[in-house]
Length: 491
Image 1 (cartoon, one colour):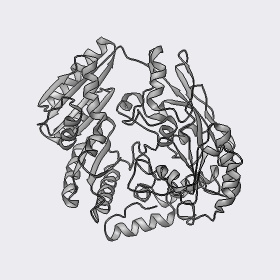
Image 2: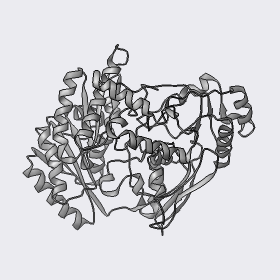
Image 3: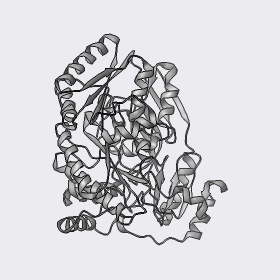
Image 4: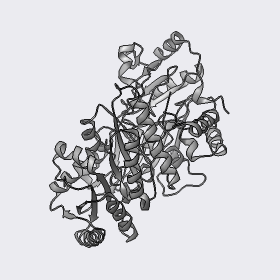
């Protein structure tokens, strides 16, 4: 088990591979020159780049199937790719492999307002599903910050979340069926149109599998009726601990907002000049709490949330008065990542999840780590479900800053596990957190992950080196942690 997928190098005859792929793909659908492949050398984790051996651009499922059959026959690694908005390096190419972009599979096959479902290809953008469903009074609930660009196939692969997932669930809660291809090119389907199915829940297994088990070619998603009304409460706090404790108090009161987000002062100061969302620039932290439903339901829930926020020490509370103001409040949160990008040459976006009751404690710990590593950090949270997104700012041109940023991030994720949480909430493991899997799982558990992987992909050809570390690398992590700072991710 130790000499498995992650550290293996493959012996590939590139000329033979090109010849076989040209037999099954149109000439424009295979990229082999460096300048053609350079745009595919990373995903949203731009600190780590790697040119693939080749790039395939299938135009339909049959072509994707043919590529997989060739690669399986020649024992060539395959890395599936969507829009490459992922932030954990899950779509980073393999140097000995074919990167398969599914961007051309972008057809909305049908929207069924009666069953409240949509059938789409993997290259369909998240937001495009809601746009297609809008005439029927429906929308697709999971809404990552990158929803204007990210694709449904990638959302399934990473089990993407979003600001409204507290009430409406992650991708896994909004997908009914996935059609895909095994590494052998066999067509497989997971799930169905029914509410339940006999046997093991392989559909849930595929969600968040990061391209390690199958290549997605079609997805059936649930659609949600648009609420009659939605309003946002924006609350300002003069202390981050008060804001963190307020989150726990809202949930403890039995309130499940449609969205419950938190931003600290550094994030506020990055966002407000960029978006003019109307945030309180004097606040140490703000909460965005959304209620949706009928006007009566919204009024009642807004009243209850306001009372909790007041008891929690909110310095200021505002409620959106119309849809335009509601969207303006959310525009600031959605723009947090690009807004911070204006302030720093580079940043790492972390993705740990902790129990809500420990949010304030974690924020104070992150502030201390910021001093320890001499790096700025802005914090945005899916606070309602404890999903952290610390944005660690650094300059890759300055020697040692990337390593310090990676070590800073590793400590945050280690703390997440010690606080009773997990190393990821929605971004996946990819290459960024692969060693940190040893922080959360035992060798026996990681061995079980490898056996599950082998049941789908015996030779470890699908997205090798991602998601699950070899046992040897787990021991390497443990030894490094016992000595100095946690090792940074590597390919």
